[in-house]
Length: 499
Image (tube, rainbow, N blue to C red):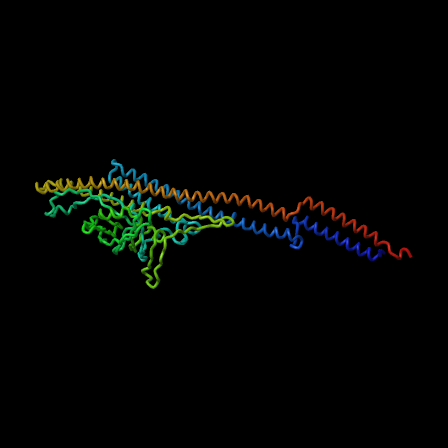
């Protein structure tokens, strides 16, 4: 084969160009630290790089945004629950103090004042928020757990459910006397006040509207079968708390007294026997006047809300269901971060404190009546008959005082039981939150390791070994310079040199 100068020149230029391209490629790798500069350099490395970058971006979203946000939410929740737990512990301590015989009614009145403040603080803690979102209200993060001010334009038709175990047996004193009875000649102060036991179903709210509860729906368990629905109970009478027979239901037929001011259903003994084994007691009532700090019904019950000021707007129907706010914290892994107020804060602690307040007020009122009668007995102008009448009255008032002190002590003891139950409720909520928080931390640690691993894989896939790149680049430069040197010698001679 004949080799011409043209062939040699073309081969020389082609080799020089290849060496120059190699130098350029290695120079780019050495200066950028990356194996490729564009997808066409190495499609396999490119595909791997895209997958690894996508995975790392998702990891960064979970690890640097979702998880920190979830942790902050849960830490705010935990802080509020811990505070609520401490408050309930203080309530329990005060109830223990109030139940002792050594405390006077005045001492107990100061205890009650502290209890009222602590009750308000519990519900205030329920309005805790994170970044402007209320944490105890489920999906309704723009709505506080309680009313922030007195509200009388919203009417709620509330459906509340109980079981037979929720029925309480309470003691009350009947046959009380007032100072005005002294001037009534028909009152002879012969009948002594007496203690009566009655059965009560206490609703979650007081100061209810004067609307009759038409019926009560209830079911009772059947062995080996589903609960059986019983006929509607309809013998319900609406009464006022000022009615002297408010706590004495009708005997014929046995019925229930609904005291709308106090939110109590007073059951006849035979009605109690019928209801005590019920596994569900459902009733509906209406409330339209709410005080600042009262819990909003939509967070606890099935209810229908009507805005009285806006009759043209249709009522809003709220269905009580589980409202779990879930964060995606890893691939196909979602975690509930919220705790609902109904799982940690109930109406019962506030209602029991109201009972304590009433029982202490009753004792203080009787003590006031006794002090007034004793003062009147100091009048030297009293006749013998007047003095004898006052002494009989004083005797009955002292009997009433002893009975009402006993009722007060039982009410404080009921507060101890209630606060213990509420503390158990909060502890369960804290434990549940703690277990989820622990899972979140485990996921965070795992994502941290994965993030490091993915960065290492991405570096191995994309980054060059700088030492190796320098060596290759230096070698390529030597080769390129050598090719130029060889080429200069080849092109020095031509056919004319030999003619």
